[in-house]
Image (cartoon, rainbow, N blue to C red):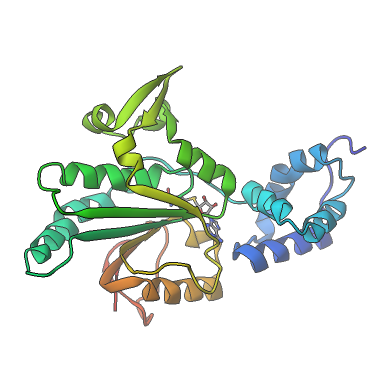
Length: 279
Ligand SMILES: C[S@@+](CC[C@H](N)C(=O)[O-])C[C@H]1O[C@@H](n2cnc3c(N)ncnc32)[C@H](O)[C@@H]1O
């Protein structure tokens, strides 16, 4: 039985990082070695693996794919919060929505809103979008059909997202008026997302590395914030090509403020920091 902390050799680290890169596009540089040790320690102890090599062999031989999913769950960083990087929500409210509403006045234009939160983590991002839209359409929402797709690779964050239960501290960034309208006290300092907001969001598991996504239509906005940061250039390039394909003409791509897309890329034009438009 394995006791104490397992050592991770460079050879084992290279095997694990190649697997994580090939399957999920996540690039772990050499500085991430100690993070891998820290995050996988418990998994090794629970599964009684006496080395990282034994654990790696188990993951690659597990045909159910569950071990691989657990691995990515441990490795990926799921940090998020409500109303994170507010500029995107201000842009939606002041620029994008007025344009959408105006265009809808044109005869025959469908009143559909389709937004994708790609790498949604535990749900704070798609629920923020849903609250903003519910609020904006409170008075003139008749005839509008709103659909927010929220996807992630990690099943554990998706379970949290679907449960829609958050603590008081997690709601700190939520304006009081939204807290009152869109959350219900659930006891023990917890609050649950109101059914009207939950109904606007559909959660699905999706690996962004897939060459094709199972979507019928296109989106007006794709949020892919603080996800591409873990991918290297070739993976990012492939992802941008797919986002381009799944966006409506003139649709927007929102990325994290610490991320950027080369201004010479062929898919998106720069609008303002972290906001790009389909070319
Ligand atoms: C740091 S969180 C970002 C959450 C949210 N977008 C935000 O900005 O607050 C990054 C998320 O990307 C997800 N992720 C990482 N690699 C992925 C992949 N290959 N496919 C889908 N999701 C992935 C992780 O599971 C994690 O939940």
